[in-house]
Amino acid sequence: MATSLFYVLICLLVLVVTKLPFVVETRRLAHPKTQYSNFLTDLEGLSKGQTAKGIPELRHYLKRYGYLNNEYSRDDNNEELYDEVLESAVKLYQTFFKLNVTGKLDSETIKVMSKPRCGVADNPVQVLSKRKLKEEAVDGTQQHNFINIVEDYAFFEGKPKWPYTQIRYRVDSGIQYPEGINETQFKTALEITGIVYTENCVLQIEEALEGHPPDVRTGFYRGDHGDGYPFAASTLGHAFSPTDGRMHFNADQDFSINDPIGPNQYDLVWTVMHEFGHVLGLAHTQVGNAIMYPTADPGVMKRYLSEDDIQGITTLYPWPPF
Ligand SMILES: [Zn+2]
Ligand SMILES: [Zn+2]
Image (cartoon, rainbow, N blue to C red; front, side, top):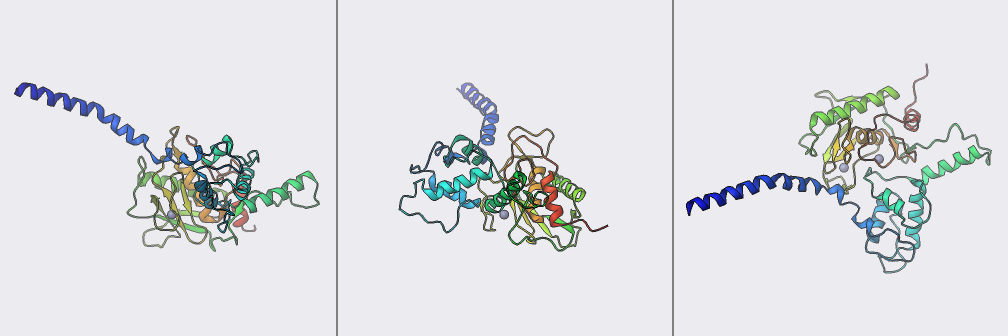
């Protein structure tokens, strides 16, 4: 009797040990970034006049990222109706992301909306009106002299910037790092970012020395972290315009600083370079290869500033005259 009980215990032990990696793997797969697009899949193919359960979430998404006015109120009581105002917002979204402007929630639009992105809102009206002027100038249909002065980079309302060129950052204490990232790696990402900006513009970006107050305070946070802008599962990070200095990253995302980067991971250096752009005063651009483009691609490393980024930052912080 005692022997068979011993064998049962051994079998149970073997079962637990062999199943353990599976349990761990399941937890890894249950990462929140795989859940963000649930409401969007319900909406694919939808067009004006139709209804769907995911519509209130779509409305929230478009408001959050600057495509729908906060004062927007519906004409009727059906909050699941894809109405005309919502269709206009989708058209604006499609224009900004250079998709076919159908007003329909086609698969390409859903695909872009499903991408993890920066939590800072876009300013589509400002960016698109600048682009229109530039296109008219290139066409020669308008007699503007905008070819050399109208670019795609954008600034925040009122063009806020730092009143000096030495910007010091510090990592917040007591923060929770995402799986696979530690403080040393985070500091490496910040250091690379500092070097890249310092090489391309007049700014000098460095870690704040002990005892010196930093301009920029940064760290990883989760969900609602007390600054009025809770992270959605798809948010990579967000930052405040000058001279606030807060720059936050989503601890629930799968980041890496490795080369090559995993196919389902996001380059932490790319994300830090992007959010630092906001901290310095750059808003989102429509230029796909720019660091200030709102979305990021998994498995891709990007550690340089595009021509658009450089023109934006040097316009905001011009080189001193020689
Ligand atoms: Zn951003
Ligand atoms: Zn935050």
